[in-house]
Length: 170
Length: 274
Image (cartoon, one colour):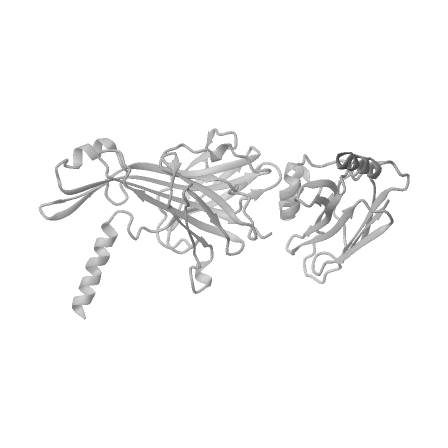
């Protein structure tokens, strides 16, 4: 009996629902430093065995000649290890230019976020920032999938990242 | 007082002349080990010095340093410079994957007495050759001991995702087999390596790992572990940094004319913060 229930649940979770989306808000703090470079930032989702299930965004110097901006991607150490080094960059819809201080909103449909077939379980949204002549910070937002009603997960960084929030809109 | 001084000088002299006793540490240090992007270069220092990684003793002999590219083919370093205390050279990373930069040697070392005087071959800083060995070592010498030795020094750098091809064993001498990839080391994660001596588990090999920057602290803070019955060691790092990593192994399973088999392995490994 149990064998039948699991796949049914999966189908239910993956069933198209018109409003389904995710939104992510990333605040980059304004820093009082002599030399400021916009940070490299990556946003992705991992399951509870550290496997990447969704790459949402990577902001880096995409426009430098000879792809020289890729030189610093490895400074987002976790992202580089878990997924970056296996990607062929730039990736459409995911790679983008670096952004300055302020709050940046992103919205993804389940399809865009590669989450249509995500099995029920424990996951975490990870946001990592690394800045030239600056520091590095990694924020983890644990969540369970699926959610039955609109739910927001929040956390704040204390050096390279400000307020981070993540909303699942089932 | 004078007698003690004389004694200690004599002892020091003896120790210095013995094979591998009080040998200085030697290393090949990469400036960085995990790289992203295209057409990247890595700069290396190589030297003989006991201070990790401060070059203040002698530059060693590194002109014959070898490189295996990720696809397993040999390639070469560039811009080799020999300074007073160290060698400096560069490696162009043209392939994605893991490069191995290394030196390796093996041979026989003999010690004996002639007219009551201590003799040995090869001499300090001299390379082994079988021809010279046969010519210079008398077979029936007084107190003759012959040691079969192997020495290997390595370091690894990876462009993009790590690969395994350059990590394969030659089954000659003391070698490290990566259970944890040598370019996948993180401060909060234990690392596992296996040691082989001539292709078989180096049971009981003694391993020491020391994080760089010893001159900025009061203790070496070495991590000491012994290989288990499968030749495996597990290390828990003392934080992020580059480590001097040395393994030593000795047994009596040598091939004639040697009676002692001895291997030393040195690597410089970079451990990143989590």
